Amino acid sequence: MKTTLSLVLFGLIAMLLLAGCPRDTDTGGDTSENPDGRKPDYSQQDETPADDAAATEADAAEGDEAVVDEAVADGTAEGEEAAEGEEAVEGEKADGDEAVADGEEAADADAEEPASGEEQADSEYTIVVFETTVGDIEVEVRPDWAPIGSAHFLELVNAGYYDGAPFFRVIQGFMAQTGFSGNDELTKKYLGSNIKDDPVLMGCERGTLAFGNSGRPNSRSAHIFFNFKDNGPMLTPQGFAAFAHVIKGMDVVEKIYITGENPRDLQGRLAQLGGVASFIKNNPDITVITRVYVKE
Image (cartoon, rainbow, N blue to C red):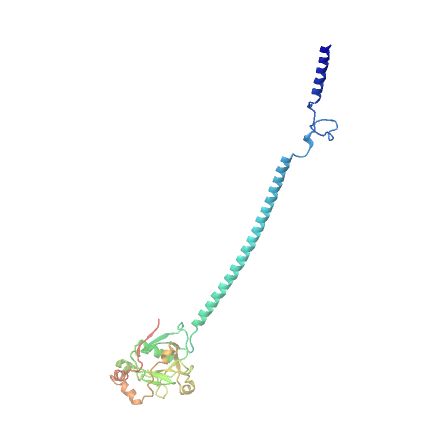
């Protein structure tokens, strides 16, 4: 009997122990979403949190790329605008440089303008240079003004007639006269070899050259004079025709030593043998022409 009772109690204890253990189909929690008690099927559900994080990072990356691309695009546009601005600035600078260059060329052109009473030496006409003890003078010979006088003057220059000739008669505010060669033989040859008169097409204006005469028609020979001022009103009626004019060195002309009026007997003595050399020796302040030549 005791043995039977022990077996019954042992069986009850075993049943109670088995009832407290979990089964394979247990969800391990509330089964309200699974009323039939079956294991949930995750195959038809949304992505897992890990996948959600990956998707979020991918979206963020795409967003960052979009932001970066937009920034690059904006930067390119700004760079292009800056480049355009720089080109505009450079264009304005170039325009400014051209304006400055034009201004400098204009200033150079103004600087090249001849001084009052002078012209540039670049000419289609013959240029003759007077080298003197006070500086050089350049004159332009104008055969269109006085063809006979111009040709005769160039003959005298080529012969060396005026080399060593003094300005022996220089009247302030009027004119400076020369005409006795430093070579006595040339004085004898040309002084008194008269030429015909030219019509007065150009009068004795400031800076012009003309031949002197004896007061009679066709009496021009070798005496020439530079006009300090416009002497036309006085000399044109007397038939003095200009044949050349100063283009450089009018300031030198005005430096010629003023001798004042000289009597006729001085001219006679100058025409004598050794007269010019004696005159220069006795008048050390006078201006002397050292050389005259045609400029090439």
